[in-house]
Amino acid sequence: MGEAIGPMLASAVAVALSPLPLIAVLLVLASPRGRANGVAFTAGWLLGLAAVSAAVVTAGTALNPARTTPTWSSWLKLALGTVLVLLAARQWRERPRPGRVTAPPAWLLSIDRLTAARSAGLAMVLVIAHPKTLVPAVGGAASIAAAPTGGGEKAVAAALMVLLGALGTLLPLAAHLRGSVQARHTLGEWRAWTATHSAAIMITVPLLLGAEYLGDAVSGLT
Image 1 (tube, helix red, strand yellow):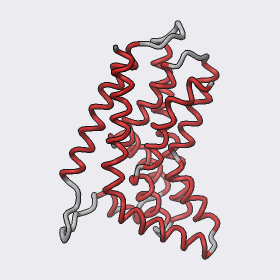
Image 2 (cartoon, one colour):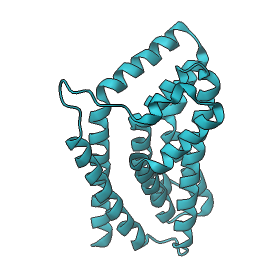
Image 3 (cartoon, one colour):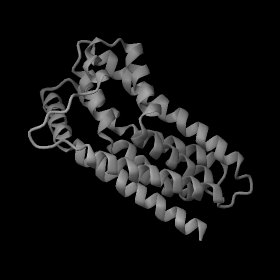
Image 4 (cartoon, one colour):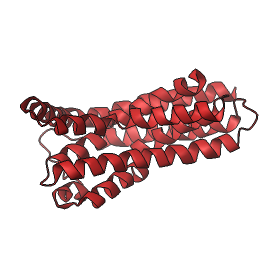
């Protein structure tokens, strides 16, 4: 089982460290329907990650029936690593400059008007349509699919990857559901921390994960 879990851990952590789900869920929890929408958003995030992971693991396992390390995973990681490095470079070019205010995305401005169903739908869209989430999710699932283990071990590894990747939504939701003064203080600290460091994280995490993917790809193809 370790052969399936080990290679995907960096990808799962990259998904969990993405500021996107943390920013979104914190805003959802601060909305008038915070509790219901927060639960729905987290459920949608989990479902989106699970759908991506299941699709990639299923397809990759079908391409790897002999339980050997396939070359397709190296080519895929080469492509994904290149995408992540390019995303980090673009984020660097578009980083906020001192004294300049960047307009927030339109979906952030409408979060306080969302219903529970739309909150869940927004979370799934953010998983599938946002490259900084989708690329590491696909990369981690591909690592699981390429592992020379059985289907049961791969299913456990995929479930663990989904759980780890959803920590950015699960932890704020758990703090909110506690409802204590300390929990509200913690959520406020997370909001301040995310606002301060989100740009640096969105540059550093894709760059490091992209470099790891490229290194794995070169090792597998040579």
